[in-house]
Structure formats: structure tokens, C-alpha cells
Length: 256
Image (cartoon, helix red, strand yellow):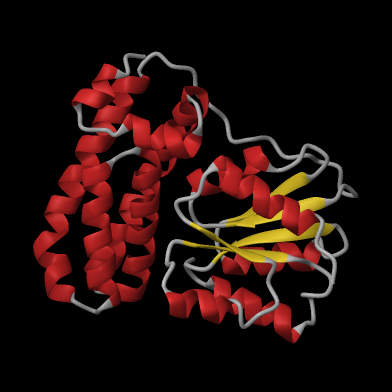
């Protein structure tokens, strides 16, 4: 793999390595990006055509987060602009600038595939199968974020994953006695993170399961709203390996 392919294509490798740590993790994360690219772009197209701005915002937000981690500066900026426009229900902006977003996304994926040519395929981190093992649930709609966090979880814990809040609630119901903690993204499709927090509140689960919230929205209002619930901490995107390790330590050692 020739890293110059990425550098000459405008990828900020140095910034990406500040977040991901080393080239092995970076290459694995690139493969994750490739694996979920078609599905993510397909969802963006579907919600654009349906003029469903709330769900469109969720998926362009996810594209923005992935792009920041991987050093795709221009794509991250374009996705951010679409996220802000869709959150403001500015359909006109989305429609007028959609092609530019997709063109840049396709340029990036072509670049990444060229770089990864001949590389081995990286599989998603394996999960422990012992049904009685203590578990950490990672709920985030981004496969990249889920895999990155999984690598940081202490080896004595099994890792469960959920793509959205609905899946997270179902996992919690099935694994209630074994879950040691939850890392919960706020911005997810179907059922969002705040709705999962309400599920915790209604069922009095905060005393049983510590929760760390993950968010790409570091606005004061969002953070304060999250801390209206008895969570352990907030992990702001983009985060580093050190950030994840710190909140995991807080979570697994949390005592009321």
C-alpha cells in the first residue's frame, strides 16, 4: 500500500493518525469505511429523495464523523454543511449541493480502494461468545466508531454492538444482568440516544448500568441535556484512543 496515493489525493494522514494512533488501525478503519460506504450513501440518497431532512441529517452527520477520523477534510466539510442545512430544514441547499457531496464521496472511495488494492481484508473485531461474560454495549450507527471503540475495551469484557437505539434497547433487555456499561451515541436513526436515555429513566436502569454518551454535537445545550440524566460522562467526537480509554475506565469502575 502506497500512502502517497492518499496524500496526493488530499487526505490529511497526520491528522488521522493523531486520532487513530497508528497505520494498522488506520488501514483497518479505512476498510470499515469501504465496507459500509454503499449502504450509507444509499441511505443519504433515499432520505434526500424523500425530502426527509431529520434522517438525512443523521446520515450526513455520520459521513462527516467518519471523514474527520480518516482525514478526508473536504468531504467532512461538505457533509458538515449538509448536516447544518438539513437540521435547519433548508431543503433548497441540500438539493442544490447534493451532487457536489456525492461527487466528492465517490472520489474519496475510489482513492481509498486504490490505496487498499492488494491489502488483506480486515474483519470486524470478534466478540466474545460466553453468554455469562460481563459485557460492554457500544451503540452507534457508524461501523467505524463501533470498531474503533471495541479495540479499546478491556479484554476481560465481551463487546455487544447496536446500530441504532431500537437495537440497543433490545440488547439491553436480553442482556440486562450481564451488561457492565453502555457507550451510547445520541444521533442515531429509528430511536435516538435521548430516547434510549428515557428508556433507562423509565425502567430505573441508571443505578444498574452506567452510561457514557457519545456525541458529535458539543453544543452547550446538547451536553447539558445529556447531563440531565445521571450519566457517567460525555465522549465528544472526534475522540482519541486516550479519550476512549479514560471514559471506559470511569464506566467500568463507576459506583453510585
